[in-house]
Length: 222
Length: 256
Image 1: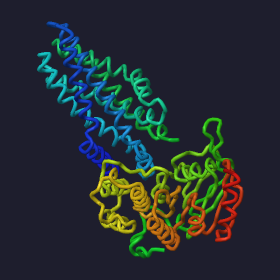
Image 2: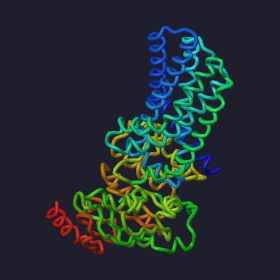
Image 3: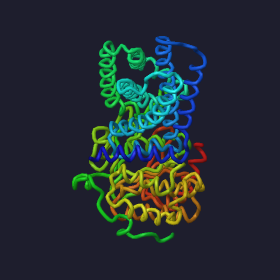
């Protein structure tokens, strides 16, 4: 119960900061929408091509918006050394990680809800299907998990803006590929083939969550 | 010196966590501490002991290793070699329990600019699991003279008031050990008096304080013992006294 209360405290604080400063969700949402609009006007596609390109556009929007948000979240925590204040508290490092992950997923989730609605309207694809939403959730958990870990690690380095994508993208490739493939299959009505990709996503989510929870304490040590 | 709240206000209950053995142990015990950042040796074989009811002042020129020492003692940095114990708890194995017993004022305020004074302390009270959070927040804000600024955002406060709030944050959870890294930075006369009172209360109630400052007179006034650090080495230690002020200033000028 203590851990749950501490996670709640971290999420509540992040939400309050966002409501005050509006530094994360607004920027992420604008970026995601611009990406979708640009892709929609750049490619005049029909049928299966539209589904394949559309799923790619959707995940580019989600991933880059998420990257933007998680990098900004780490920067906000670094101002005035507030992050060290959190580390000085008797909260277990794993619990801090879960709190930051919950905040990241909340903010990315808000942006995704908006992006999916706009995507459905622009691309005329059945993206609000429960199976597509499941894939989006699984992909977001995997990407958000790695992003939370690496944004904290990158924030301690000098070239933090460059370090986050450099650290995050290679390791999140399995998540991105699985999510894009699964989304494409679902949007082209090949639901029978999607099982292995969802299993893969689930497997990587569990793996990354476990590893990140354990190594987070070492990652934040000086 | 300004009179501030007595013991019943400053510490209304024993903080959760420490056992009787922990309370009887030295407040801080460091043995052979070495801290290396790459090729740079920030601390070299530093040993010190701080007992309950004691305030130790650490002096030294810029780059002497004072802040590094406090970062190691506060669990923010792991020593390259050596051992740290706090109230009988060993780092890093019992670091989490140690953090409950330690309050830290650092070079930065550890506050969120866009949260209000109250929201900042409320956040930390939740992390520390304080049961009487509301009452305790009001107490520490009154101690630091911030009682009428609860709804102001930290961003809107002056540097001195932010520093007062940083001190309030550090004592919020009633720590047994206070680690204060230049806590008088930006404080006006009244702020310094309040800080001196808080240090005095901490010592009087059986707590311990480790303090670094460049304000030699202030340091010698509040500390009972003085340590001098230079280039990561502990050079000497003496009981604090008014006579030491000139000697410390001379040494600081010579080694600057």
